[in-house]
Structure formats: C-alpha cells, structure tokens
Length: 166
Image 1 (cartoon, helix red, strand yellow):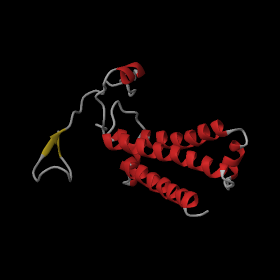
Image 2: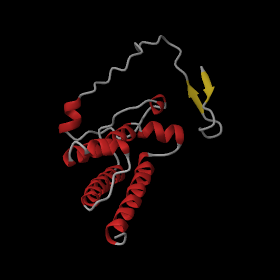
Image 3: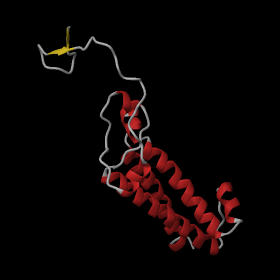
C-alpha cells in the first residue's frame, strides 16, 4: 500500500505503510533510570517523536543557555534577599505579607523560603520546557530572561533605596 507523504515531503514523494499486525503493547518500555541521569552523562536532549512534544519529559541534558539563565536568576534572587535584609536593618519594612511572615521566623528562614519560591517554579518551567516551546512557542530561556529582568529591576530599586533614598 502506498500513500502520499503529506505537506512536509517533496513533490511526488511516497511512503510505504505497514499493514501487518501491530505487535507493540502500547506501553512505553524505555527505562527511566535516575542513577544513569545523575552520575553518567546522558544523551537525550530533545524530543524525537511528535507524540512526545505534548508531554512533559525529563531530559538527560539541557542547553547551556538554560543553565546560564538558572544561575543568573538564582544569583539575583539571593542578592535580592540580602539587599532586603540590609534595608530591613536600616528601618525599611517588608510590604509582602507572605515574606513578612517568614521574616518573623528569622533571616535564615526568610532566605530559605525566598530561594525555594524561586527554585520551584524554575524547575517546573525547566521540566516543561519542551511542551511550552511546542504548545506556546515560548521557551524556558525566554521565561528565565523575563525572571532575570524582573529581579534586576527589584535590585536596582533596592540599590536606589540604599544609596539615594536616605
């Protein structure tokens, strides 16, 4: 049996379709070994099947731009927390009620929660990167750039308050 290959194939291309018995069981039999991903350099860094593009899949390797974006955002988040603590020691008040609650438990708790509230969404976005890119045409690297721009704006404001707002 021969069918037309569709819009992606050159004019006049044909594809042979197998019409025999389907022997696959329908389950994905690929093994997901966490130890292989953590201790050995993996090889999976993109989707191979069109069906997988709508699913959330964890890869072995990611693009360096994603790693750089994560490091920049996390560094800016920690700098924001430190500058916030410095401002608070000089008499400023935390306006965010959630973070004010954690500040009442001490600066270490405040920094830990602030860091955690930054890391968690970034991990979710990193894992969902392929689905986001396929479905919404926006990648995690762009989202991380937006996060970094937001944190940079907050840090600029905090520096202004520290040095010019006296």
